[in-house]
Length: 69
Image 1: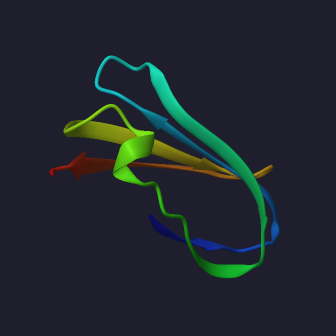
Image 2: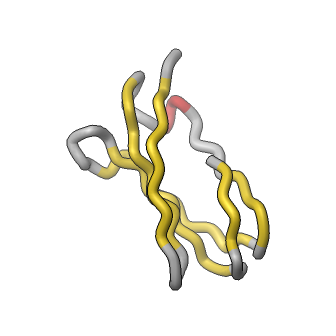
Image 3: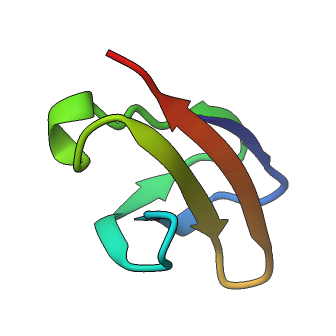
């Protein structure tokens, strides 16, 4: 998952399944600029559509991803 941070700092990534249930969550201290966060297939619940949310203290971005094995 690639994203740009206008300011560095504590950033959280949450991944939800289609029913809205949280299936993965992690918090990292990331630098300002372009960042990439990798979620491995074994950290999720199998194939399907997932929604992710990247959140900082000032901004939130949401996206959709598909896991196919």
